[in-house]
Length: 281
Image 1 (cartoon, rainbow, N blue to C red):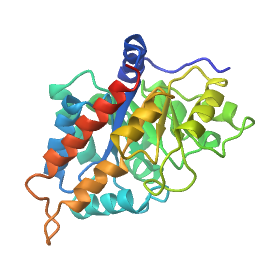
Image 2 (tube, rainbow, N blue to C red):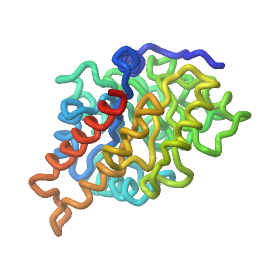
Image 3 (cartoon, helix red, strand yellow):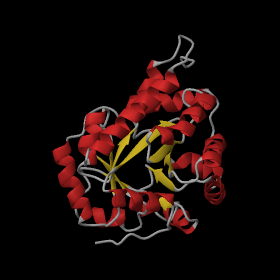
Image 4 (cartoon, rainbow, N blue to C red):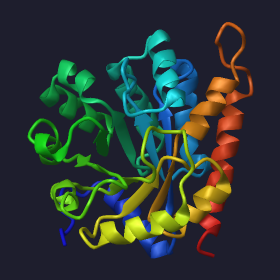
């Protein structure tokens, strides 16, 4: 088994707190700048108070190949609204002015980081208050590109595993992973299927034979009941497409958000958090 390594961050502290409380966490995902930079920041600033234990913020990219239609569309909306990687970091800075405890993970693709400059990006991300990175198109074989530099900079690097990640592959995936392991509970792209808690339980148990890192489970979790079912068999449930879908559905004909969009997103977060917290009562 690989013992957890890497820097201590808000992520590692949060999972230690969750373990002490005897419950799983809720991880929420939203794309920075969707539907507008202003409303995106407002929602993210309030999402922890609504019940998110960890926050994933998507870095908009023009070709998000691992994401389903909902998150692909959110990236395009954000880019069209003028969102950039520096502005994404500004949202993190704004969040840190009011919350210095909730972990923030940036999730996305390597190309925008490469163009920004790896060293500059890591320095700016650390300064802004980023705790972890998920870069879906950088496998362990490319760990020198960003994973190892991120760890050196004091930022957790989180790897994805999937139902197709076998026991020969898992040790390579978790060798330098830190913070937590993100288990993709279904094959395919985000937001298109629902996770089966029984299958997830067996897969999480298998991952835990290879690492003592917490295991967060995402893809296919859309309702409070589904989040609760996953929370019973993992260390955290990750919800993204369902939240992004609310934003997509609550826009006027010109594409601008309706007045109650933020409230609807936060209401779902509250319901998801209640489900996760009740899972082990």
